[in-house]
Image 1 (spheres, rainbow, N blue to C red):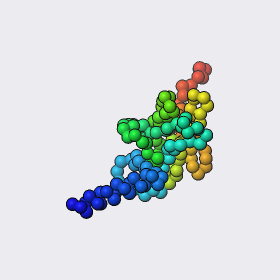
Image 2 (image 1 turned 120 degrees about the vertical axis):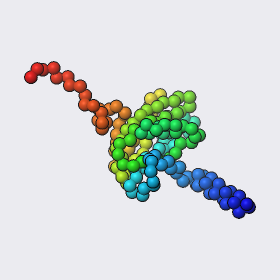
Image 3 (image 1 turned 60 degrees about the vertical axis):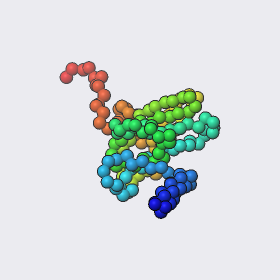
Length: 162
């Protein structure tokens, strides 16, 4: 019994130590068995964004992805989300003081690539996007945008008869 308590205590200390050491909290955002990291898509959700004053520091978290919700139950959001390749739709929450905003973004993840959330603010407006870490280029867009895969084509404004 003492060995079990000691083992549990050491496990708890290791977990706390890992969190304090800055190891990212990873959330597996796909069903099924684990797959090698080179077959996964990594989305890093930064907890701190440069250029923001400490008191005004915004908090960004994933509240739902691919139709699965309920991720706000914990006090802290994960730092990394691991997906399988393909299109993903992610709902984000941005909090700063008493302000609370939500946005839904989509992106198509490629196996072995890492993406990161980026945040820009001017006054009371926020712009959140997902960027490919290797290229620094934005990927995806806002849910429902014309370039989102699987969206119906825009209605034609051509009224000519043929």
